Length: 143
Image (cartoon, rainbow, N blue to C red; front, top):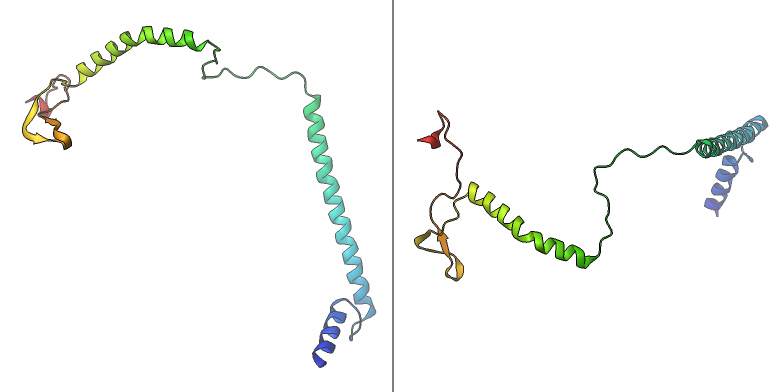
């Protein structure tokens, strides 16, 4: 029971009631609460005013300027059958161009290494496959 009494006294003092306080301290606390509420209301109104002003300023601007040029390709709505036939016809030329490029950079000949195989018996290729450019003076691969 004594513990409950202590709690009541504590909360009474904390809320400005009872205890050995002056009456002026309670009034100051009430005034501070009112000042805080007024400041919070003013800040809220200011934020709302800024938001409304920003929206209004955007609405008053004239027509939007053209966007800057884009590096993306435009979307072309083309029939799938037309795309398939066009790309199928171009496939042979593209494959030839890519195989010529690979043949210029790498040795693509079939030279399996003797006595060595990968899993399932696939032979490993022997030798250097990269074709180096013309040897420049002082480069070790020119010898």
